[in-house]
Length: 170
Figure 1 (cartoon, rainbow, N blue to C red):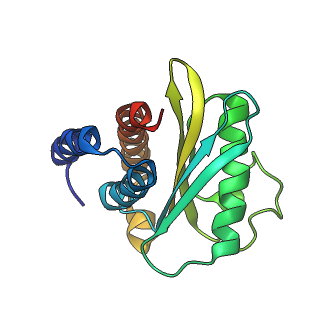
Figure 2 (figure 1 turned 60 degrees about the vertical axis):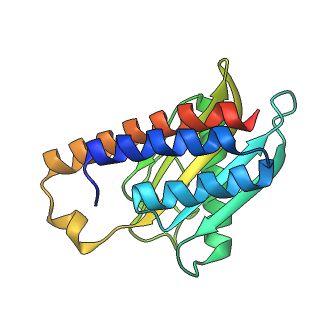
């Protein structure tokens, strides 16, 4: 895993690449692909919304490997709804045990970690970026304090990533 300085450098390089991009679909694909690489995620979803109606305009799901698509779809729908409703970033180390949702909603999401952030322009949500990661045995070996620090660092970096990419989606 890259250290924070390397990730910030990669984020700046990516911002330069986005400035050169003119194709909206390619921009969405690049954002999802870069998010997977930068955060070692199993899947990344970029869900674009109509700010007036809050209806989905376009969704791009990029997966590192063949995932359970219905599970990724369920996570996308419910987590993006939570992000938009609460106007806040979302982090869950174990989605199955997350008390913000019904106990049965994510039964098949054993040890699935999720990070999600709103994509905003001028304080208006135009989309949501969602990363799904299967928890590894390495995560369980970390101490609670180091896991919390790592989790908060990742969320902070994802929020910066969203701030960089959102203007390119307008």
